[in-house]
Structures are given as structure tokens and as C-alpha cells.
Length: 325
Image 1 (cartoon, rainbow, N blue to C red):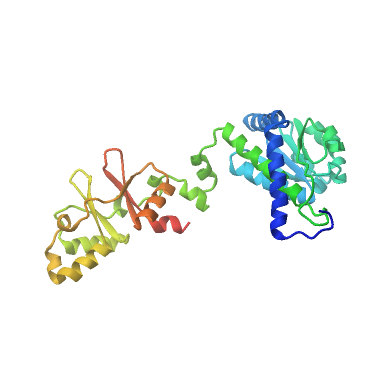
Image 2 (image 1 turned 60 degrees about the vertical axis):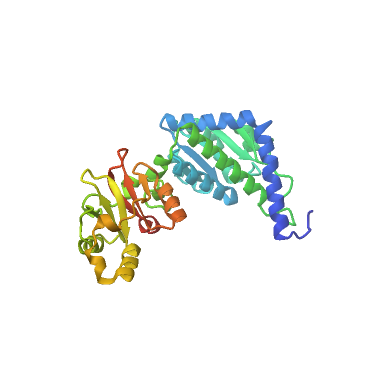
């Protein structure tokens, strides 16, 4: 396939084939090495160390992505640029740190010049490379083979299938390390307070409109006061609660419009208890916001009532509370 132009689809197939071969090695001859690498990552984090990923060029970009994934899953990590390390950055490496070097050839000159110093400073060295007989591999305490038969490039030159394999393997290491460290969705949310993913992994109780922001009326409330409550709280609905705070039903903007169209001014003589929807959708306040979002989208509603274990209403979560993040 060398020197033969590849179609975009053929490029993807080459990379997909490389990933399948990698997966076979990971579950076969590399299984013990993979487990060893993950054990070292977990042990490093549990003892206060950091994973230091070092690389240069395309491999360096993969190393940076690895660091970002580790950090997002609660495993402390930092990237070390192989060229900058020789000018002082190597000082970031400590005795409890685990060094993971990314170099497909295993012969990156800037990296090889650092090996002796890095090995003296770090707890151990793991190499991700495509040549198990390379200088880097021979110097490492553990080698993870990311070799590919061909690159997804007609000239078999541009790092493509090899970097994809390196990325996939490093993702697998980061994910399994997080699982072994019992990293939970709640932890993910804490590390992503400004992101949409983290926001949706928060609990409903953390995002809902509660207390004075909760639209609520008793069943005997005249419709005019119901309208006032809905206008003041601006959620497009109100809950109708029993004296004990339990959910009797809800009234939405749409309910009011349809009622006024049907009955005109006579509708204002009604009470909340007469016009409420008793089969209102509600969710436990301890559920994930993502679960609430899925329910709202499935039922085509813009707000959902939150209750505690006794079905006492504690708040309302609006669709915009999730979309805006």
C-alpha cells in the first residue's frame, strides 16, 4: 500500500485495523504489562506522586492528551516537553513521580539525552513506543508496544495509525486507573464545575430552584394569585402543595392559556386545586441532573418537580438550568 493514495475511508480502515491489532495484543501477550502499568499509575497517585508524561512532536501531543485525561479522572499528572526539560523543566520530576515516555521510534534524540537524569529523579520509567528493541525501550522499566504495520498514509510516513494507537492505549490506561481508584461521577462533576458534562453529573438538589425561589401554592389559591406566583418565580409553572408540602399537582403556562381560551374571564373564578394536573412528573432530588434532563426531553416538558424520599417537594429544576451551562 506504500506510495498508493488512500481514500479517506481507507485511511480510517487502516487506523481501525491498527486499533483492533492493538486490542488483541492488550488482551493477549501485553496483558500483564498493561496491568503492571495501571498498577504503577494507581500506586503513584495513591502515594502522593504524579504521572509525568514526556514527549516531543506528535507523540508529545498524545502525551499532553494523556495528561489531560488523567487529570480529568482524578489522577494527578503533568506534561514535560522533552526539549524544554533540558533547560530546567526537568526539575518538576520528583522521587514519587512515575515517568511515562511517548516516542514511537524510541530514538527521539532530545528524549534520549534526558534518560539518565530522568531515571535518577523518577520512581520508574514506562515507555510507549513502537520498537521494543529501541534505546528508550531498553532503558525503561516497562515497555508498552504500540507498533503498527503501516501508517494511514499512502507514503507510509505521516504518523497516523501509530499516534491513534498511542492515543487509544493511553486513554485505556487513564480510564482503568480512574476505575481502580474508585473515581465516581460525583468526583468528575467536582473536577468539571464549569463544564456541561460535570454540570449534568451534579445532583438535582444542587441545581434546583428551592425555598423562596420555588413556585408553590396551596390548592385553595384563586387563579389570579396562581398567575402572580408563576409570574414572580418565572419558571413557567407552579407546584400545588398539600399543607404538609407534598405534591398534589402542577399548573403550567400552557394550562393557563388553554383554560382562559376555553372559559374566558370565568376561569379566574377557579382555584389551583380545580385546574392542576395531578399526574405531574417528579424526580428524586438525589438523582443526577442528566437523568432529569432525559426525562424532560422524553416527556417534552420544560421543568420537573424534585421531591425527597417522603415525596415532599423540595424544588423545581428547569430545562434552561441545564442548557445554559
